[in-house]
Structures are given as structure tokens and as C-alpha cells.
Image (cartoon, rainbow, N blue to C red):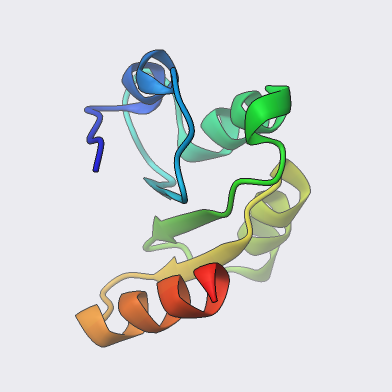
Length: 92
């Protein structure tokens, strides 16, 4: 598991393959949408599942996430079982 402080830190740590990326929407320095866009622009991460965690439940924000390349979306607060269920479904 690799952890990052924000989107910029996450991009710097993506040096090798990962099974999945879980990111928050609202972060300092680079938000989750921009992180997803930049990750999707990298050929080796084009198909890596990306789950976004956020307090935003608006349909417009979900659409922005999908357009950026998010695989899934979990609204906070959430129960650990919800996250595990999504992870299992995505990594299937």
C-alpha cells in the first residue's frame, strides 16, 4: 500500500504498478479530479481502477468524476463494509 498527502504527492509516488487508486475529491495542491485526469493520461495507469471518496453527492460532481476517469464513487461518511464491497467489485 502506498499513501500520499495530496494529489501532487500521489503522482510522484506512482512509479510502479498499483492494483487500485483510492482518492479524495477535496485535497490541497491538487484535487482528486485533476489527479484522476493526470493518472489517466499516463499509459501505464490508463485502466487502473480509481475510486473517489467525497462528501459531495451531487449528480454533477459524480459526472465530473466519471468524465475525469473515476471507476467508482463513495460518498462520505461511509461504512468500511461499503468501501470493501466496492474494492471487491472493482478488483473482482
